[in-house]
Length: 102
Image 1 (cartoon, one colour):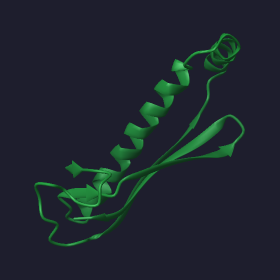
Image 2: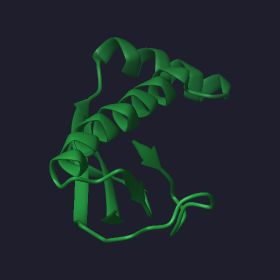
Image 3: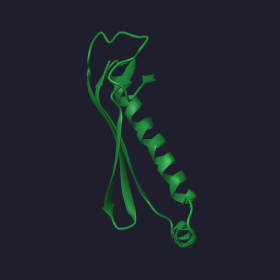
């Protein structure tokens, strides 16, 4: 499956727009990771535990989106956008949504 955040593919022509597809995941934080993150927050630097969790969340959201695009007969996905939101304390949603698949 071809995917891009751009409005089109450089090497391919979009023949038809099939519709909107999305994928999302909701992840809760782990108390052990929170303690480590709190310590890192005190001394400064990247909070690698959360960086890893967000990366895994992006991949999981994409993994949910691709089958939806394939079920519409899509060969590619354009205009990919990621967004996050807090669902409840200690958990967040990561949503990937596209304006069209072709």
